[in-house]
Length: 126
Image (cartoon, rainbow, N blue to C red; front, side):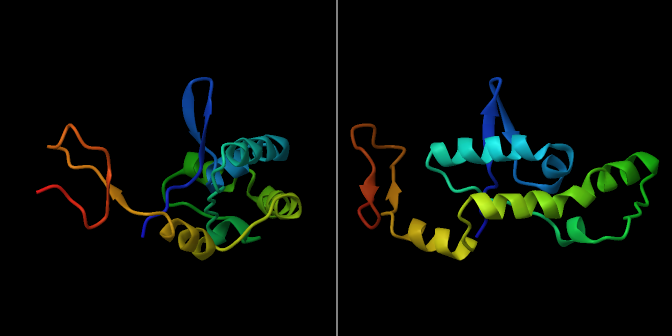
């Protein structure tokens, strides 16, 4: 199952806030702000931080100096930012979120039936 990572709307644009690039380049206070925005909207904060984000060794890219800078910039701050978030927000494994989502009835809309609303699973228009 694919789970979409969290985004916020900022200045009319959708901004991804869940991955290492955002976390490396963004101050902790801005990450907390973004997490609060997601929570206020009633959505779970879905993050993905690759294990290499926590590796103390400098990463080497085979794609040149600019890529080397990108993959290493701010990487040493990731663990502290994550620790900060774990101390201030409740976190659960994604399996808990998926279990809760599974409790929501599956609704499907028949694209050919303009007069009907969504029907519960198993009651598709024929």
